[in-house]
Image 1 (spheres, rainbow, N blue to C red):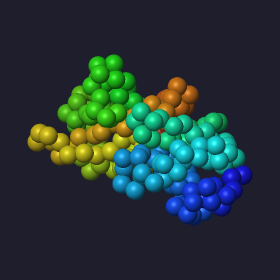
Image 2 (image 1 turned 135 degrees about the vertical axis):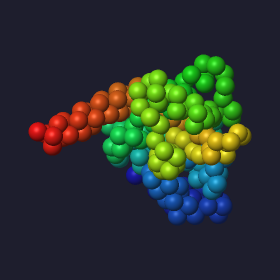
Image 3 (image 1 turned 180 degrees about the horizontal axis):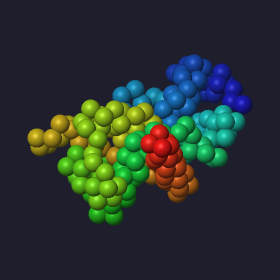
Length: 204
């Protein structure tokens, strides 16, 4: 286990033991730390300068740390499972945003690592890909806030008359890797089938 007191001593008084503990706690709770986010620069630098000790700590929880210096973030990925289950609507939106992000990368339509999608575009994608109606604005805001908590997306102002648009953040490619995509897709199908079965039972 990391000795944060010893690590802090290497900073010549610039940082204290609790600074490293707080950085580890933030990474554990938020899953992603972006250097450019508010309050993110210091914990990002502490983690990236001492990746060895931080990786040792997270290894005890069955998690790996990935550092993406190009886009300025660190992210933790569970080795054995995706983590806490997402609500079905969160799952749908996350999978759809990952698809959009891949499309934007292929089209070289990325700004500082982020891809942007409007509600109008999402409305069409919901119909074409999911065969569903876009959730109302209030629910969409709640869904985006949920995805923001683990570094996958954030709400930004729209340039047109739309209430907002969504910035898809680069760590979505790490969080929703191939294994996680399969798990999420399976969970989404299972959850929907379960819901339909319950409705059928109620109807019977």
